[in-house]
Length: 410
Ligand SMILES: [Fe+2]
Image (cartoon, helix red, strand yellow):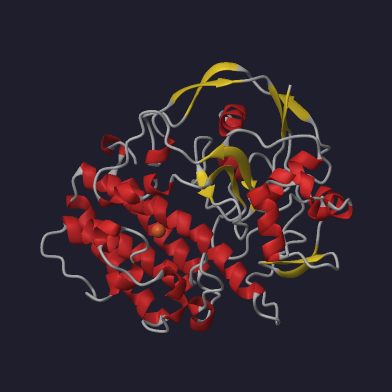
């Protein structure tokens, strides 16, 4: 979280309003039915994202810090609490798609009511509570990305292949040949410094030893992935981790998620021909790891990745300027195309302390069985990435915009 002395009232109010509006705008093209479907247990309905982010503010700001505040509806926290045990019982995650009520319109008007209450409360909130508002903004930005990936998953289930937006993703790295940059080695530091916003899991900044290595100048492309498939990559057990091979066989995995066997794939812009020069997306950690082995390389550690891109301007990579379709930016960079799997398990840094209160459940309790991803994707909102960011997913997850940057021992 932000240190409380850095949270500025008026600026915070503007960013809060802009963030809340962007979420509504992202849901703008969706019907109530579009927004209610849950395509699989890991994904959530768009309506649920709209409501859950609102629950977060109503609970941790208005209910807890505004005297006399009364909940909009006392039954709704049960529906829209995600995983906070400190907030009690809740609706089962795999059944979020069963909620045809409240309607999308009711959720939208609840959002506006909460926005107004927040803006009225802000001038009177102490710095510690404003830090929670900042956390709520960052939380909502995470859900903006999830809203897009979950809509992609929803529309991918529909044989009519609806398009969320009309803009086709632009090609990335079209002219960039794979090259290798020498990484720094020796004792260095990673993790967020004490200034500015960071999630609790990014701190404390601490010393790490980095061994001699090289890191790829760009992410793996669709064309390279097609070569992996053509070379029998998905049929060669020696390339795969044992868990990965079991997963592949159990799920009959033969290609990245949303790929079809005719050279096309399903995107937020509808069905499109696969662009060989664009970075591959929607691959699991298991696939990333097998691909790296096939190509005589390995995945980077989170230390190697972070040290390589610590001074890269993460603002350059952010794509999500406003409502509507997203498009990876030509030229690419470490931020803004696809999240990049690392070989590092998502574990606490030395001296990690979860945030105080129920929001301490935000990150720390998930530090088991998940891998760290670095960078940002084409669906990550502007202003929401930095080198110290630690995204994390289980090794089989692939409905996010997840791709691969290779590394090698020097
Ligand atoms: Fe959440």
